[in-house]
Image 1 (cartoon, rainbow over the protein chains, first blue to last red):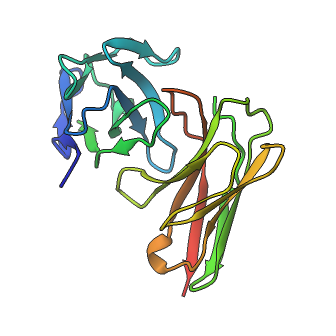
Image 2: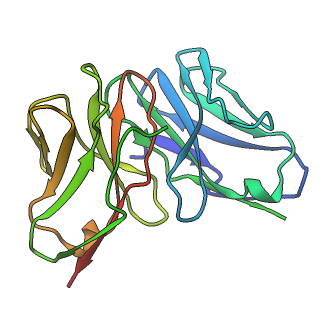
Length: 111
Length: 108
């Protein structure tokens, strides 16, 4: 059974049109992560939540925001997607200092 | 920034042991070494982790040097399904930063 679920698997959005990607988990983990992965590159951490505490990476553009309304759900909002934001977006969960579980990702296309 | 250095790519014959090295010379005493792999178009998958002792599970073995400055992931009998990018990560508490990883090719 899938434990970290990302919806949708594929998302097409228009240049400049806000888009939201979602992630849910059934593991009751207190840490949730969002990564951006471009072709042939390693996943790049955008931000993560430790419980309700939001931790933004210093080089994450302001265009990327996140919400975590409860333990199970986390959202990635891209306020004005540009062509350079086309990528795979990965969600992951863990307890601190234990293994992380990743979703299958959402592949975002910007047209 | 990632605190690990790995070879860009490696080849291994099917059925042989694959030994993937990782350097983490600046590791701190409370930082764990984690290994993940990513098969094409899938999310990364956890393999194994350790602090200072060698570890083994159903997927792999992890050998950590005594000074903890390097480690080796061992896949004992590589199969074609082990073709993936393998990431060595040094982690403390809640943050997980990926380095560039090693692309492992299993040759039939």
